[in-house]
Length: 553
Image 1 (cartoon, rainbow, N blue to C red):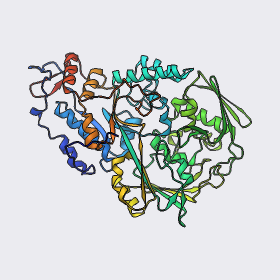
Image 2: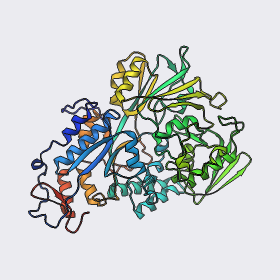
Image 3: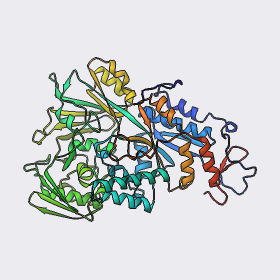
Image 4: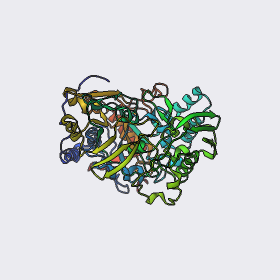
């Protein structure tokens, strides 16, 4: 944490979205073109660069992300770039970005999930093979040199070789600019410590995670842990889930073979042991597990899950399973053969992989239309009811090897972040763990009976460019936009100093993998104008930015 304040002030982050959007469009055209901007007297024969639309979440849903986005658009406008801010709800943001790739640029929040302790989780999102409408390469970035670096780190035989390849991948992403990590925030969460014990900070989601969901123990006669969130899962179908944020409710229902423990180390979960030998990984399942409908969990179920999620191109899992060439079953043991050794496979893929009941899913020939309204899993909780827009109610699975201390858990959907703060203060909820910057939880520090947890994030908030459409298919244009972002203001004003300016897609807190030579980025309008000029862009007499000659849409 930088711990310093900027002398400028800002309005409360939860200010009405309409007022902030209006502020973003208030820069007069004649005042936009910065000094040293490339200009032309006659733009005849050139195409104007279209208005850039920056997608983000609404101010009510994610106040700080909205404000980051607002300041970026305002800075671009001040530099003469025709830009607009488009705040949308969760469902629209996911459908237009991760699902449909129908966007120009958008501000993303990669939370500090345990799976991202390994660099493969983020690096895999830029593989060329995943640059499809339904793929995980949300920037639609295609670069053979990057693919080589990614595969080199993925298949490295030793850590030094892998570290060098991870560094090369970071440098390529820095140079080619499909994404701009903006800030590495300090994140917060809070819970009612006057009511609950057994809740301990953990790597990743600090408070609401599988470990605290099962360990939380009431200090009075209550028997249900009530968790508040502003995010409603768009689906309960593991084949369709697209983000780790959406996976959280499913992690209560479905077991995984392995898991990232509270201290960041990989531990056995549904598997009692794991052995890695070259390109083969062998898991031995615990004995005596059952699904929520009473059917025994078998090695065949795990083998089926691997192949089913791979073959149906499940967005969150298929990339990690793409190298699977064969799955063999022997008793309780499942051997997964890979095309080549994969450094990430156990720590990333197998810690996320849900074990699906074969007797349910084998008959689902088209999982894209399967709602999975009554999920059957072997996890520590069983879904009882889903009231859309209101809550998800879970009952504890007392037969689970890590049986919850509570009888039930309720995930309450709240209308805004501020509503969650109020609900925790009043006692309506017991735990609030929307991973937001720690400054958003500041007011709760003075509430009796509430404990606020803060951790340095190994995730980041950043800016994705859609490199499959003009003008973002031009690296020079992306580089110029990156130089026009006021990183210090994002840290000092929006984050109130509780963040570091961005640079690499691998956060500095992951010092084993972070390349210190990548970033942090700097605000440099002069460099942006020079980059645009060298690439042939120019502003016309009316302040409109034009493509280079013989370019454009």
